[in-house]
Image (cartoon, rainbow, N blue to C red):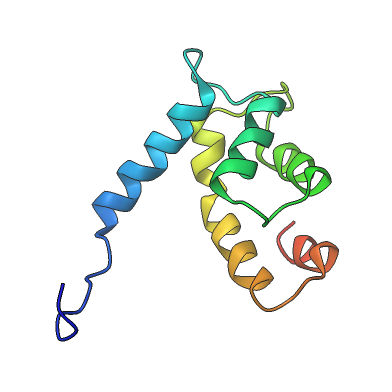
Length: 103
C-alpha cells in the first residue's frame, strides 16, 4: 500500500462474522461459554482490558439465566455494552464506575 492509499475500515458484515467466529472458537463444541472459556476469551481477544475479577463480573452480567454458561444469544446481546465499556475504558481506569453505568 502506498502512502496515498487509505486503508478502508472493515465492513459490518466482516465484523459480525468475526464476532461469531470468536465466540465459536472459545465456546467449543457445546456452543456455550463456561466461566473458564469466558476468561480465556477476554484474555486472548481483549488483552489488558479486563482483570480476572472484572472478566468474572462480566460473565455474571452476560449469564442472564444464571446457569453458569453464556449462550451466543446472551453473548451478542451484551456486545453493545462491551463496546461502550471498551470505549469508556479508553478514557478512564475506574472500572467500578464504568460498570455501574452499564448495569
